[in-house]
Image 1 (cartoon, helix red, strand yellow):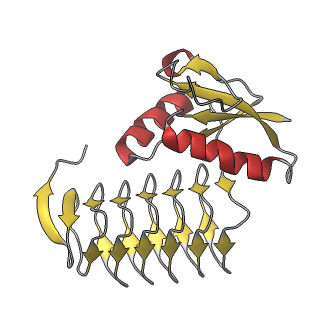
Image 2 (image 1 turned 180 degrees about the horizontal axis):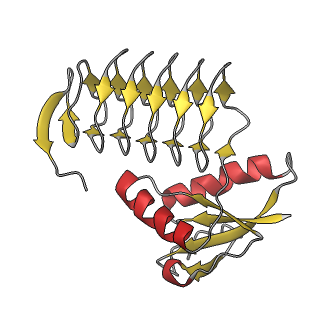
Image 3 (image 1 turned 180 degrees about the vertical axis):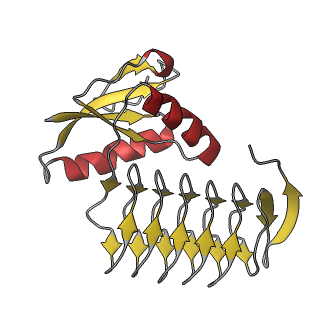
Length: 215
């Protein structure tokens, strides 16, 4: 039996703990072990019943550990996960029982799908994709490694999110649109056309706000 380690003890980490508890009794691969976080006091006052086992930089994963990264920001998630992989960490994929997964979908290692997520059919998720509450991806849509879709973000059929895209809450990427690597789609925005890499988009329809360098 493995020990599930939740990486990140912030608000999203505490949510992931709730979803892991919903799953724990229905599978035999792991049991919840605790958190690691850069802030050893991150859980103080919350009474979650699970402790921080180690600070992030001091955590030394062993073969009995399975990690899940509860960090929403794609760049931070990538940095933290890559550091843990270099230390030999293994990662789980966490799919809440309420998630709907249609035929032909492919889901990479380290993904998190929270309650109410819908993957219709032939959807492809890369590694370490985070799908928060109620996010949806239509037929043949794709989300690359490290992407994060916030609450009720919707990706239309045949749309494509390149690596490290952040789609804000209640945003909508129209069918067949491609969003470039490292781009940010603001909350409530509607993306109607292809988005160059590193762009920040906001509004209805979404307009280009700025561009950042991709490293």
